[in-house]
Length: 171
Image (tube, rainbow, N blue to C red; front, side, top):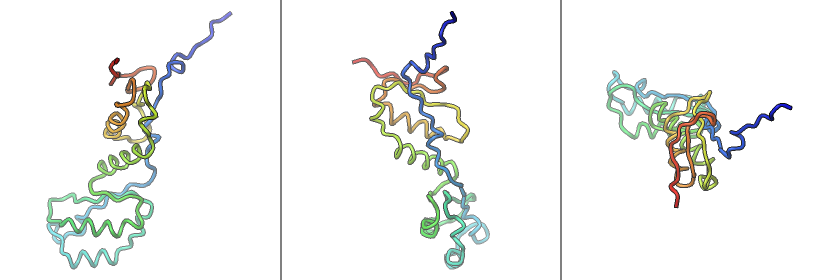
C-alpha cells in the first residue's frame, strides 16, 4: 500500500496574506500641471482659471488621479487644490504626488480598511511575495507594521520557502 501524501504546509496553521488581493482596481492617471504653465516656468492665475472652468473633468470619471509637476516651476499650492475641487466629483481618488505616491496611498487605505490586525492575534503569517499585480514595497511595510503587535510569527515569501521576519518573544 502506498504512503498517503501529506500536505505539511496546509497542516502548519500558516495564514497566507496576498497583498494583490487588496489591489484597488481602476485606471491610474497622472495629471502633470506642467501643461498649464506659462512658458514652462510659472502658472498664470487668469489663464489657469479659464482652463479649469472650460476643461471637461468628466474624462476622469472612475479614475485614480495623481497631481504633480514634472518640471521645476513656480506652482502655488492653491492650483493643486483647485484641480482637486474639479476632479473630486468624478475621480475615485485624487492625491498629490506621482504614480508611486498614488499606489502607496491607495494600498495604505485598502489595507487599513480591509485588515483587522487584531484578528491575527498569535497567528503564524506568511505575507506572499510574488504577485501578478504591482504591489509597492510600502504596502508590505504597512502590513508588517499593523500585524507585528498581534502576530506570533511573520514571514515573507511562499509557505514552502519563507524568509522569517518576526517572532514574538516568549513571555
